[in-house]
Image (cartoon, rainbow, N blue to C red):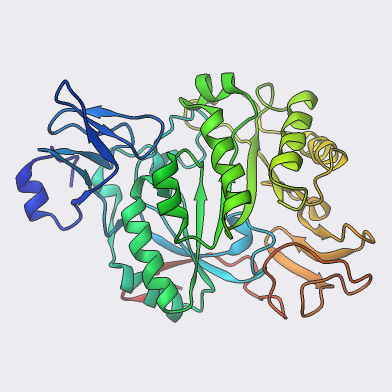
Length: 374
């Protein structure tokens, strides 16, 4: 189905179009979306920049409730989460659209989609939760595009998952207003927040947004919630890879999030509208990892490159490798049942099971209602 004009008939006839909140009327007749800092101001029938939220009459609507770009069972390490039930499978899905305009988007075919036929799969919250249980998944992840823009669908899925003892994971840029932020993360057990750079100029010129609201989200998550938090930065040559910026980001994380919040430094590859820059050299990630750890962060990982040392977890007490990783596969495991280093007893921050999962590197597409496609 092509991009449909937003009309009252569509709201009445299409179950994926639902009335939502997070809006306020303006004196000029427009309706302002209050979900994220972009604050799109819409006239009747218009969509916001995110594509999936828009206006019908006096209402704000979400146009992708119950619709997904696909479902897949992934290793939890791929989100990436290194300290949240390592080795376990996670049922991942997203919708379409995004509330940022990153020129370097690595999932642009989904997040930049303006065609609702991208959303080939339909699934109710209970069907997703049932599929997670059936597939042996420890958690469900809202990912591929930013889940804050489909908050109501994510919230309903999370509620169904929690009824079945399935955890929920948000992979997000954290670009959301305080009221919506509190509502969204109330249903989330773990989050990986994409901190795209530590520069307002970068956010403005490369992502079409602002840094400050993301830092506010991160600090709020660390101080005010029980959500397990990890952070990812895509390291782009010549744009956000300077020693000074890496140090400033790590210093800020230590001061505002604490030294135990893991940082993932991922390699960029040319994509979407940024094809003129080279892929990130592995040496750049290793240098950035060293700088971040020198600043005081205890758990810093490299991603999108083959780097077993950079992907493994080391005890901050005695320095031994407590979780060995090769890509997404786990090797040696030196944590006791309480999640502490088996050699020196130092606590390792995170959510760990008595025994690691054994999902490994597998990635299996799932058809909701039809089981796993092998």
